[in-house]
Image (tube, rainbow, N blue to C red; front, side):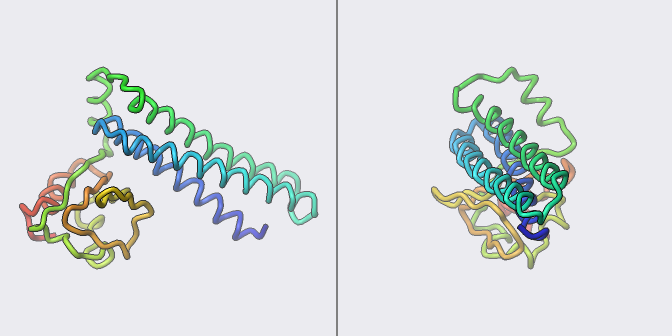
Length: 193
């Protein structure tokens, strides 16, 4: 395993674990079982990625391409990402088991500096048909789209080439100050990004 391969696998594990935490909290806040199920599917992917990373690290240590301490560090980093993914699954499990959260817990999540928001893109929205890289939505609103539900399909790994369409349900996170503007843009109430 090259240094670049290890870096890419660790980065993918980290990004998937972060996404899972965001989706898990969103599933609880918005009482969304579909999101919770997606967290479970992503957790299986994280398990596979971590297993692949461990096998490659051990193989390279045996072949002398990695020092034992380097292989251990890689394995530990992967295991930490998997532990975060497992915790996200546990959060999503609360939604799947229909456990009613105490209102204080929901309120504390909503009161944090970084918030999660869900909004449907209207046909009147200036976002409809736009590529994220062209409109620089995160720069203008402080909100990052973490997932899109388009019909029955989920889109993760949203990037600058992702096109937003009317009817999309956007799940975003960011600063509380940008939420109103972001929601107003998606709903078509504001036209200036």
